[in-house]
Length: 239
Ligand SMILES: CSCCC(=O)C(=O)COP(=O)(O)O
Ligand SMILES: [Mg+2]
Image (cartoon, rainbow, N blue to C red; front, side, top):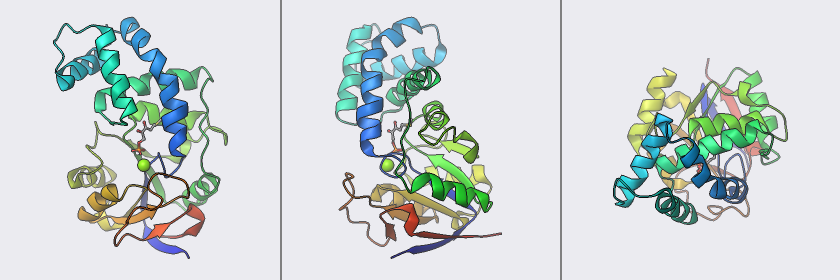
């Protein structure tokens, strides 16, 4: 069964919606894990890294003099618990951007994703991403994919820094403002019902993505229309 949506903007979650959760939790997390400590030690004079480390120390209740080893132990614990804390996402994003630039990382999408994104874009729909992954990490992840460099498909990238937490209504209101769009002209696709609830509370259209084998495949999506792939979406364009 297909779901019909008419929109000007399509905003997309990444993990569980565009890529398998394992692409993030296994491929990307495993890449970041052993590199966090060396990256922090090498880039402590980078204000972005220094600020992220300070945030980890503060959020974890470590003293201001906590060692890199203590900071990394917290970061590993957050990854194991899949806690999408902003300083973790900042540091991961820098490491992943380096990995993609070196050609050591390649993103693989669900098979229905790239054809749908290309056809929506060809019909002048605006595409944007809203992910817990940092903007730097997002852009890098689209640069080297099994379908080539897809960065040109997306007009905007949003994360927990420039928009806010994904389960809060205000983040979606902020994104709508940045897109200069009426809330009702934006369609959000995500595998996480709580994210869809927040988007709907901001007046957005929502589509749940329940893909077989993914963590939220059997979740209760309430009143949100649900698809198991983008080939079930009939997207009309609001001029
Ligand atoms: C290269 S972006 C990695 C995505 C990521 O780190 C993540 O936590 C995904 O979260 P999402 O909000 O897209 O489900
Ligand atoms: Mg997701």
